[in-house]
Each structure stands twice: as structure tokens, then as C-alpha cells.
Image (cartoon, rainbow, N blue to C red; front, side):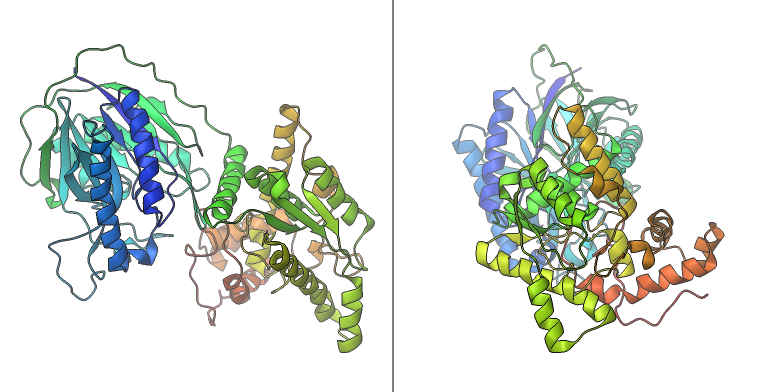
Length: 582
């Protein structure tokens, strides 16, 4: 059987940085060539970054992407890399499609191309376009209608893009019909909790359906609220794992494969009306060589995976937007403590600034726990009491009740933004998903910030992640970053004497269970009650969620780790009189 050394380049692209992304592709291609690769691949839309959103509808950006692809092909040849075929994702447009109602303007394509000997040897576009969750690809793209196959070193390689594997039909059965020896899919599928297990089972199933070895190349890094976890996978035709790349790391997964020799050149129209487009790049197999032993990367545990996703998302947002440092209001509580730990791991403690802002209602341990957190992590720390400002406002306005409580939060938000403007840090908002769901936050107060690292993490998970992070540090012989008191004390906003969160909210164990059904699962009141929850509690929680939509719209972006985060996943009207029946 012919041998093929495949280089799967799991890289982090930045949206719009065509030059920087091209440089990364050239650098990684050179490394692949030096390691004897016969075919190199890069993720979905690696040249433009993903997702490009409405940039896909801007003709100037589409043309810039097309020009960058052509220039990249020429550059690879000029630098002595032209003999190595390179598969790279980019943004293209259809030459045939005519404008019509319902078609995206300019007929953009989520495309990929094979670059070889200084030219574009083959272009194709994603056939299945996702239109759920965070995906709006029917808004942006028109579908590809070909079944691309390239012959490399005597092996026929069928090509696909992301959703082509996630949906039934199309290019997977077409790969079998075309007699491919390898199905290679390039992807930019965003991370979700426990998606790694789903992905593995998907790739196994598709390999069996395609009847050939299947390689799934994934992107890493972050883009706005999305995180990409890598975890590229290669399985044989029976679905058995050959090798697997690490999660959340840029790397080249190099794998040697024994594959069936190509037969007659396939042609014609196959499954789903796809027309086979076959290009021969090199017909002769390589001389036999000693293959590299596969070395599958160890897989992260569930808590380690989620924590690393939060670190990756924050780091990408800070670095890709040109920021250098972050600012956090430290209350001594669990939320700000976990955000601080994530920030230190993402950008380094030297670039993390914490401010304690005690009021007359702050407990002694609040500042003490914040100081202890700073000592443990090494972040920059200061204390600025808000009492003088609070007294001035109260003297002028004479506020009481909730208005008095929220004033303290808004003074803290104002102070953080003032420091941000003066010193150039971006403010991190410490709100969690449980609070955002129920509106348990103060507009222009604790919701102030440029990014919300734990926005998609329920409170019960906050505690679990904090304990995991401390345990991981202890196992490495390091100082656990989060003070034990921040984990064990009852959560409190400390805006009035003796206040605790359960004054306003159900116990978090119960609350989060209801929220997961309603927010993440779109289950109605009757279903949730039938699941064993008290009817009055369910009615109360659902009403809190429904009436807080206007607050969530004004909250900053934050890392998405669930199947349904607040943002593009869950789009509900603010003005909305529908309520689940009680």
C-alpha cells in the first residue's frame, strides 16, 4: 500500500489578519516540508480567520482574501515549498451565481484550496452550511456543489469542510463512491463542554461511512466569544484512533498512513448531486520508508478542559485586540477570585491589576481575602475605599433600599473605568451565568467591563473550577491561587448588613439545575416541574430570567463554553410579553 505522511497544522488564526495568517501558514509549511510531509493542511478559513461574519458580505474583503491566496501560492513556490501540496481554508466567491433575493450579496463561499507549484490547483466550497447556534452560514455563504478529490503520491484524497462531516449525506458517502483512500476535513468548530467526546464519535462514524481513513483537522485559539480547542483526530476506516493532537495548543500533528492505491480516475455526479472534481498532483507512490510511530496526545479531564478554554478565550481577546493588561475589582469572593486566577494564567500576573473597593458594608475578610489572593498569585493590588464617594452621593440624593445598594456597585464600576482610562487596562466583568440568567447584577456596576471570562459558567461550576485550579497547583508543588475562605464562605454582594445571595436567589444547586433546563435546554415550565422541581420556584426563576433580557444585552462579551451561551446562541426579544404558563 502507498505511504503518505500527512501534516495537520492545528493553528490559531486571527480574523482579518491576512498577512499574519499567511506568514503562519508559510512558517508551518516549511516545518512540515522539513519533516518530510507529502501533504500539508490548515484549518477552515485559516487565511482569513473564522468566523468572518459580515465581512463575508464586503466585496473588498472577499477580493483581498482571493488575492492573498494567490500570493500565498506564489510565495510558497518562491521559498522552495512549491512541491508540497498545501490545503488551506479561505474566503472566496462564486463565479457562476447570479444575484437574487435570498442569496447572500456577492455569493461568498466558505472555501478551501490546494496550492501546488506556485498555483491554485483546486478550489472548492463547503457543501453543508450550518444555520444553528452561533452559526449563520446561510446568511453569509452559498454552498459548494463539487466532490473535490486530489491524487497525491498515488493516493486519492477526498476533501471536506467542517459541517460536511457533521451533517448526514453529501461528501462523506461521496468519498466512498469516489473510491478515496483518505477523507481529509478541515474545520473551525467552536469548543463546547464535552464536545470532544461527541467529535470523536462523529469522526469514527464518518470514517466507517466513507470506508476510508479519515483525518479531522481543527483550529485552536479564540475569536471574540468563541474558543477553538484543536483536538485534531485521525482514525482508520474502522473508526479506530490512529493519533490525536493536544487540546488548546498550536501544533503540527504529523502522521504516517498506509493507504489504498488510487484506481481509475473517478468522475461523474455522485451523492447529493455532487460533481466529482479530480486533480492529479503526483501519481507515483513514494519509495518505502520507516514510518513515525503515532503518539496520541493525552486528553484533559472535564474541569481542566473547561478551565483551559476560559484561559484561551481571555488570552485571545486580550492579545488579538492589542491590549496589554487587565483590571479586576476584587471583592474577596469566589467569582472575582476565579477571574483573577484565569487572568493570571492567561496574560501573566504582572499584567493583572486588582482593586479592592470596600464600603461600610464590606466584611473584614473581604479585603483580607483579596489581599491573600494577590499574595498567592503575585498580581498587582491596591485598596481604594468607596466610602467618601458613597457618602457624597447619599448626602445629595438620600437614596434608600435597592437604590442605595446599587449605588455602591455603580461607584465601583465608575472607579474601575476611571482607572482603566488612566492606566490603559481593560476591565474584566466577574459575572457568572447564574447571575446573568436571573438579572442578579447591577447595570453600570458589576456588569462594567470589556470582557466577561466566566459569563457562560454557572455558579456551581465556579466553585468546582476554583477547587480544581487549587488542586492542580498543589499537585505541581505550587501555591494554590484562590484563598480557601473565598471558596467556603457564603456568596454575598455585601451591599447591606448580613446580605447573602440566597436572600434573593434559590440555592445555587437548585437554581442552576432549573436554569440548565430552561436556558440551555429550552424546556418549558411544565417540563421542568415534571422533572421534580417545585412549581412556585420554577415560576419564580423563569420570570427572573425572562425579565432580565435587557440587562444581558448590555453585558460584555465572554468566553462561550456551553451549547447555549447568552449571546448568538440565545436570541430572544427584549420586549416580550410571552411567559410560560403557571
